[in-house]
Length: 413
Image (cartoon, rainbow, N blue to C red; front, side, top):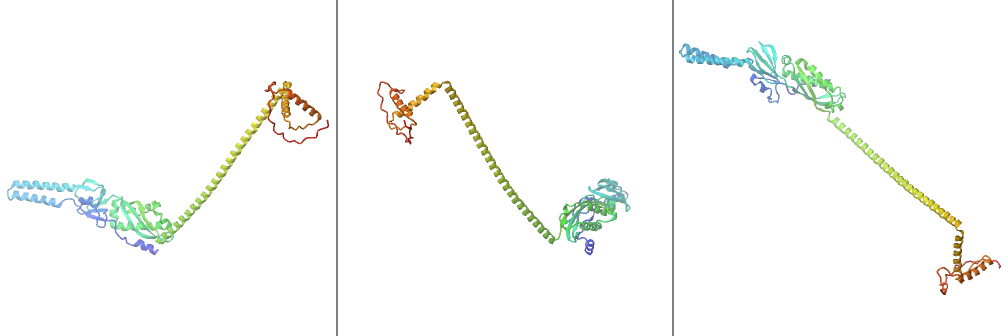
């Protein structure tokens, strides 16, 4: 509490709000001209409140005196006429210029008569009688006000440096001029702003100080406007230009943030590794599924081929059945021709055997031997197709050696 009292009671390091005394004709330039400290006055007090030009009126009086002396003492009526005319012109000019009042753009004038407040007028040209005086000129622009950098305790008793820029406007010039001066309002406003800052800092933690620029401070704006309303001032804007916790806290905060970033990076790496593993497993699963699909397709192809072979066998069997059926039908239809074909085949076989003297026959009974000899004699007399009966039988090449067979024991004749 002692530190807070010292901060509130400490005088400001410099004055930001000033007022200046210049002639009314130079007021427009004075509102735009900075002084040696870079400050622009917010109030102008005219140095010549009575607008009648004393030098012009003095010249008019001198002209009338010259005219009087020239006419009555020197009988120079021409010079007297010129002097009277010049005096009248100077008098008209002096009075006319005192009637026209120019209030600079962007300012408000307070008029008085006999030292008392009369009314307030805006900028522009106005006709005023000489006895009405322009006492003050007050700017209408928004005035920036910098709250000095102070160390204020936060909710967790950590001091932080905060700097605020506040803009306000004088909405009631009468209250501002007659209730307080510019320099006094500077001190009062600094105290009010520091009070508001201290109250605000008491409700936030040191971690929230870092994000103080992003917080909504409209409630503080309303509190400041209410505090300075008796002086005819309205606070229009409030912004935090600097908010910095102690260096030790910032280092600790940076360390914590760095640790959090490292943890987050570690989590991301783990997530990436897990994702890669998942992708690898999915890829392996896809490869297995693809291989299973290929095996399935291969099995299907083999099944199709087997079915095709089975169909082919069935078709061949059907064709063989058809062939045998047709053969059976032919045998049944032409039995004699079939016997003739069989006889021809047997005859040719017997002839081949008869021509081979080395051939060994295996007989089953005596009748087979008799038939063999009979067949031999028949074959000698019957020519085969393609042979000429009148010609000699050409020598046949020796038949190949017959395949040795084990003779069977023949039955006794």
